Length: 209
Image (cartoon, rainbow, N blue to C red; front, side, top):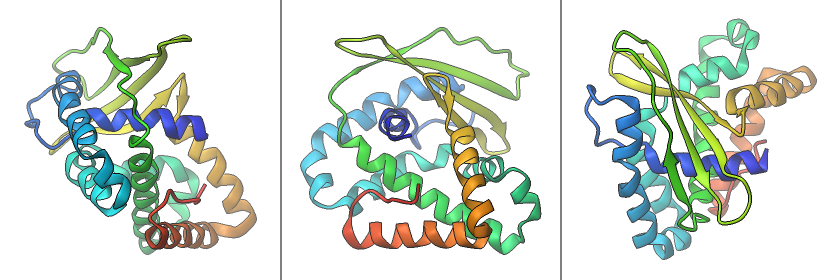
């Protein structure tokens, strides 16, 4: 999963708060790429020295286009249905913070790799679409990275990312199901909260996996 974390960080380059609700998912991905890349290139030293600035940038430019509640519901699966509303809200909050810190920190490792858009196919009436891209490596095969979007009342939202055919949601679902079986949902939520507390205190990537 570490490889999934690192590569998925590139996905953050494409999701920002500048696109209108009418912007199609592929246009959204393409239009905001340069903005995020420029921010990383211009502020790398400041972000490395103070991760709170990096997290704030991700919060502003990226998070509006992720639906963490939908992602959380998919990650927990049947345990979501069994959870209280308070537990659901706590899980969404802690899971969101963990992903933000993990991916934001990984952004600092971006080394000007080429991000290539692949042909986009969708109909105006589609409620769910897939935006396909790939990371071009100087040596080795290209890395496919696909974004799953759904049309919400406020515009297109990302609800899953697949790297080399591996779904982020599916990977977390498998890992967290095992942990829930051994420590319960409350135990899982508290372990995520503790990882986030350590991350905030140390300014480093969390260990809530």
